[in-house]
Length: 210
Image (cartoon, rainbow, N blue to C red; front, side, top):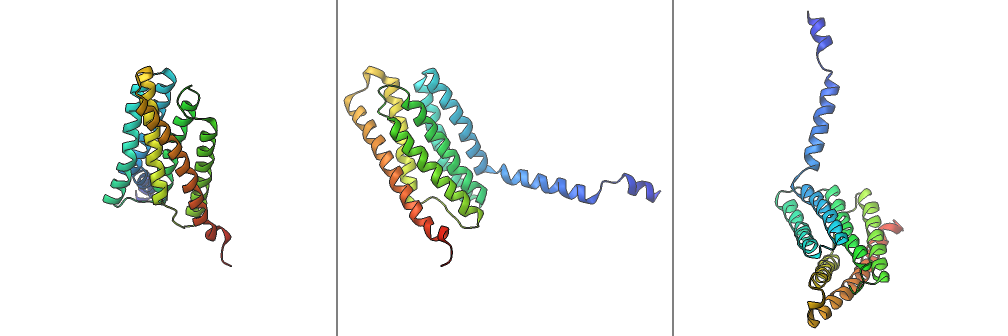
């Protein structure tokens, strides 16, 4: 009888593996990571709405997506759910949202977004994300610095201003056009500056021990 029970009982290793997989799934789908993934879904909605010319709805979705960027970091600290994965996933999704919006907006005449600006933004984001992944993989933290945070805020303000002027069309006041273009140039400047600052910060780690 005991032999039959032993034969039909699940192997302990299989049960342990299942439990470990469940724990990993729960760790991934924590509050901050869930907010980060929701931002990716919202980004796709923004891209579709821009393509359809529904700029007002695109602006609303973009503002909601940008707000989750502040919330996921807040909840990660509040709930003590900060992790290396979250530190990479959060800025990666930010880059997809912002760079994707700029790519779509550059194709629309009269937005003030020029191709070289988009190129500078995309190259910088890819470079810094690569450095972050490399250093985090070696166990070295590479979190966002103040210049990077200011860059993200300015980029979000720039995209919002562009979408607002597209929604208003010819009714856009002159001051809004000037503000939009000023924010876009400032966002590009901060993008380049913060990128250089991150590279300078990472150089000692990339060179290794002397």
